[in-house]
Image (cartoon, rainbow, N blue to C red; front, side):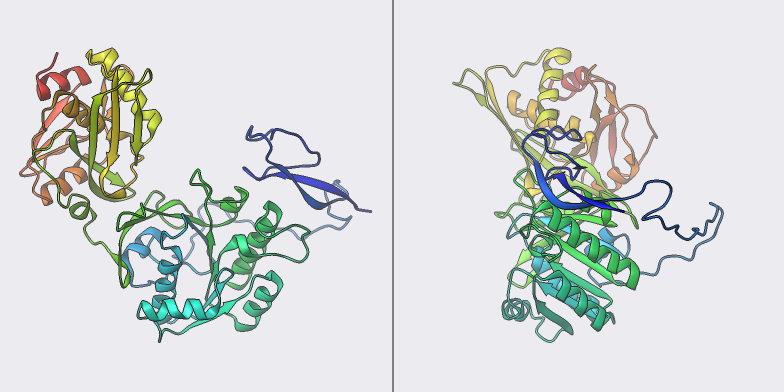
Length: 455
């Protein structure tokens, strides 16, 4: 006979244990173990509750499957990030900072999917239906065939979904949902996990797509147990600085398409508008003769994107100089500064260093190392780079420049925007693009000498 015991889970990683401890054994975080409630423990001799299950139908790897059907929203940037459109029976998790535009994006997407013939339900746990309706009217979507609901009771929501039989359900947000079978407050680890499991199971069982909106923590991760990200098929992050009009929709997990794909939007008075040419937008109002600026030819998913790195170097009056970074990894900046000092003899001790990616973009690609080094050197030496030059390349701890992928796509994007020169690493697949003069460097020392004439 099964017996009930108390279970505990980590609010940081979702690891479940049967005893409480001050430190999670899975992720190492302190004071994150919380009580979940009842955990059923039964027989473990090859069966559940003493009953055997049904045999699973197995197939081999050579089996042919029909291509996944997809529904296009007509919002090209959203379809790109989803991998080509919405897949039936898929579960999607969308996270982002408060006020960044998640609800606006999903309301626009709901209207466009309804125009494509899908039956769409929009369930809000944070706003009344009247508030959602007001937003829709402000966005010019008042006539869209989207069914609205406002509730947080998971049982009521599932009953409505069973009755209405929708093709797409949007839940805003998963942290406000609560199941009356779980004895904890809404937003707790157990509630979020239970709600996500029930909604994802509904999607797989009924063939409906479910989009879950998730809040994020101050570290930028989706709040709640990490197991939720494993449950769903796609995890999207909606990024951007509230002071900038640009918004980036980034796929960090996608079972039906490329991960790290991005879609670029611009926030306007009429909602979110697509940006067809992100590179041109990120380089708008660029000052060609300013020091401390370098244009990086990057790749986000399958899309080449040009962004500008901006650096400022100033004498410091502090015992420990400042290192401030926006849009890039601060640990990697420390590595670049150390390599410049150890391998090129250029020290930044006693200097404050500020680094920024223009336009609110966030860059994670290691190929940006050389562009960051170029911006730092330009700021330190007070010497601007060539106005028609793009830079890319990964920097190793030995000071060598390592080859990067998709060189040809980077150069084609640069050529399309009027750049005539590129600086990159030696090696890799050699690419030649008409109108681009490619200078290849083997290490950071030769780059410093040939670009800035500094030894």
